[in-house]
Length: 344
Image (tube, rainbow, N blue to C red; front, side, top):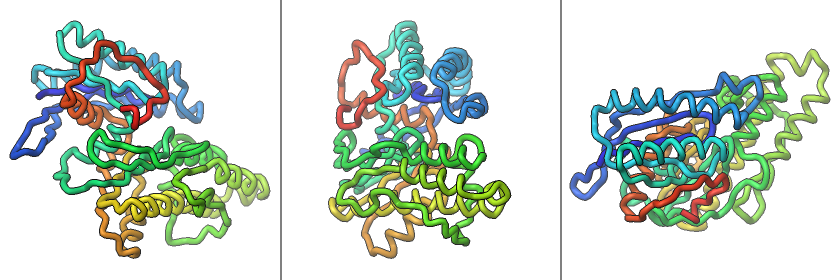
């Protein structure tokens, strides 16, 4: 089974070609081609993604990277998978329309994939995954922060999600306050020094509430107020910026780990699965591992390699394969900016 996958949910134009084959009852995925055309530099001056500009870039890039992908893979395509949501609607429609036109030309089956599920299933690439359910999945990115109970592939229940800013969005907004540029997560991670104590007393919003929801707008506001209270000399000093970056990162990590481990214990999870761009944060992964050991939890931690945490079409190909196994016929695919994983 050769799958061509298209992912355009945000500002990365992605096409991958993947071979899925059964081997002793297990499915293995072989990457034949994987191309990501990033628009980060284009959107940096806006401090975030500008949807109509992203749509235009997708339209320009898709034919180019399709040609490259087919040349690299040198394989005939069996099915086409495309991200239908959630995401930015203009961007989603660009990928869907391109995929549908391609499916007609090649006379191939097309399947729709869920972007959140794809982030979770990125953990199935280049790994032997077994005996992991039930699992608690933390999908954390610029647009999403969700805790999901996963009882099997395709069996999901959303336990909690952000009520305002997502964790990645909080990284972006606080980095902008500090004048660090976009995207904020990688910049703050690079500047932060976990060996020092920032002592800026930033809040950990909702951390001890008896639910699985998140809120990061209060953290962003606290950073803004602290920044405004400082003199120009202090607020632009390397020492202050490093302390603030360290505290921002730690505040977000504390909330994510506490809520996730609470859910893992409450639902007796065998695994914790991370996905999304923020999952590429090295400190988050290391502190998750330490917390699991410290709390003596018999829980595996699955985290994709960094390149598979950010948006890519490899994960869409894996999600597309499992959608194909369901046998559903997709006569019409529509973009759904707010598509839920439990509607999958």
